[in-house]
Image (tube, rainbow, N blue to C red; front, side):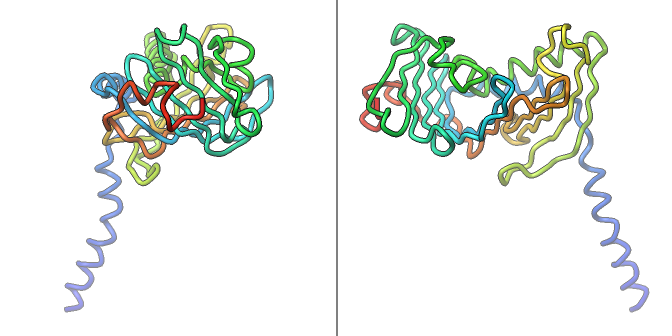
Length: 242
């Protein structure tokens, strides 16, 4: 009986190591390639988008945004938390004169503007224009930089295991790009989490050449292809405040 207990205890002690051994490190570039394939099969999605950006040298407060996206490029955003709570923005490629339809929160919520995506008003407090928003654009930036660095034998990648991200397992990577800022790479270091089920990025942290955080983006509660229609991207939608 004692021998049996010892054998069982020894077996249980080995379980964590075996579980870890099964989590074989995937190749970062292959995972990145699979992100493109996964997103190519997605027509639309909705999510809670959490962002924090460094603008004009200052790291701005975190913002929580309800986001809807439909291909080829329709995006609706409503700010839930943060300094711009109550703000709404809508951009539909080829509609509304390719302008951003938007209003701020608070007393300014009654004033709807049609703005150039890269204009001063639309870009205020933003590191990127609305035309850069979304999982697809994130994938484009990551893949182009990683592939170039790999081709130049300049990509340093480290797999950090499968971690829990918003209740779902995700691959976690750290990638270091060339140190020289003038070589045209997007950033110096990137931390990336890729959902193992969806095959899509759910979180990314981007650091500059001096180690400073440039931007942080998270996609929580992702809902894929839930039946979004053109009405979800219409400024006359009765549920919106334009």
